[in-house]
Amino acid sequence: GNSVTQMEGPVTLSEEAFLTINCTYTATGYPSLFWYVQYPGEGLQLLLKATKADDKGSNKGFEATYRKETTSFHLEKGSVQVSDSAVYFCALLPGYQKVTFGTGTKLQVIP
Amino acid sequence: SAVISQKPSRDICQRGTSLTIQCQVDSQVTMMFWYRQQPGQSLTLIATANQGSEATYESGFVIDKFPISRPNLTFSTLTVSNMSPEDSSIYLCSVEGGIITDTQYFGPGTRLTVL
Image (cartoon, rainbow over all chains, first blue to last red; front, side):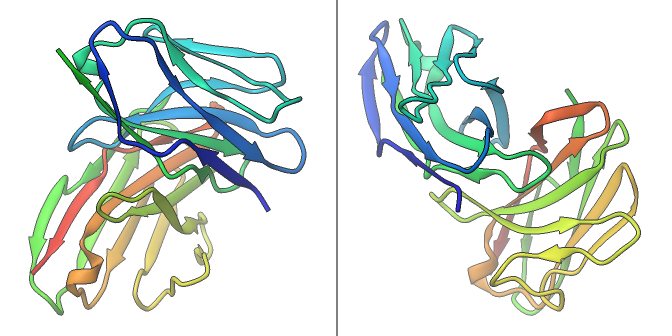
């Protein structure tokens, strides 16, 4: 079956630090990969996505590259802000099926 | 992307009562899903809401507890029946299909507290 493994949190960083949240996956076929973000008290927002190998998704300074050879989709940002504090979920979607989520990684950015 | 709304945004309910959550999307979609997010946890799929037929439930979820309707391609409801404190969660709908391809978009969620 499909599965997503992401690094456990919480991750605490100082403002302007570099962020990496690791995500690896197991899936049959060629799923699309996503990062969703959940700000405190809110629902899930799509942060970025990639639909095929070597695609790079990017949004709001965040990036992630679909690496089929390492089955990974690590999230990176060069300089985090306090407003980036949230829970980040890595996910895969085989297409017209349920999304498989990772457990979520809580990020706290301190001034 | 799609604009998805959910009502209510939050509610506090008494044990033994039922609550119906609505999900409305601004365009016709093929698939609608209902998820539960328990406090501090990831999301768990409850069921797929099928237009014109019964919902498809995941293991551990049953129709008597979580009846779902989907009367058309833009609307669905989830009822949480005979609630207990263990049902306190965020309930989210998501959509895919129609003009939305290769992505599921999520509604803002309904935060339910059962006393």
